[in-house]
Length: 352
Image 1: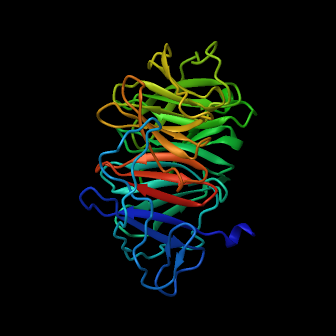
Image 2: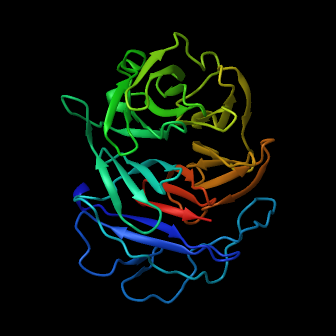
């Protein structure tokens, strides 16, 4: 299929006690001329659908020897209205995704279309698409991971084939770029994270298996970046790591997929422990998020699901099995809803 014929979908969630309500919006590169279609997998509803099982989840999971979230029988489904703002809005290998606190909005990287999309979580379509930056303009080339600075709300994009980190303001306008000296030509820029105070940014090099720390100077509207002359991860055996995440305590979580583990280290680069599991034979972490209680949610692309571990690293549940195909990125909003990108399905799935 021609990439320009690709389409994607996004789920929004409406809270119903103990039941997930899935809202899916289908968008294409053309403005919709009629009601958006309801999509499950593989059934497609083109009119008012009869409610069917979308794989919703109870709020309190039933844990068995292989933990899972028990599906409800017939979750209610509804559809929010949406409008496309701009043109040529479509998904082609969605990857990194992050929720912007106070938005309310989602920022998502479309790796195949080499752009960055802003979606609201309240039913509107994509707000802005950024596919070039700098002066002269440089196009994104295989962007992958992203994060949002908790202090400034500036957006950081790991642009892997350009071997650098791109910085945008909260509206998506270009601010700065850095990291090319450290990344070299290895196409390894895949992950980025910022500490809680917004003073240090950490960039993950998949090719070298290293993390590069930079101090943030200047102002929120004119930030500068200085490499701290040392890297993290050397000697830890990172093998093609896919992404990283910083929690509220500034613990760094590295999705070390080829080693079938999540590696934890302090903000000074000291390895603390790792999370792994023997319950699933092909545990392949590619992204992580952490909730306020310290539970760690790992996107496991090898098993096409998301696993939940408590703060001690014990597996306590999973969701998305049978729904997700090739999950890539995960984020959580202020209400505790999860949004997962799926590169094969070319959708964003919402779970609550």
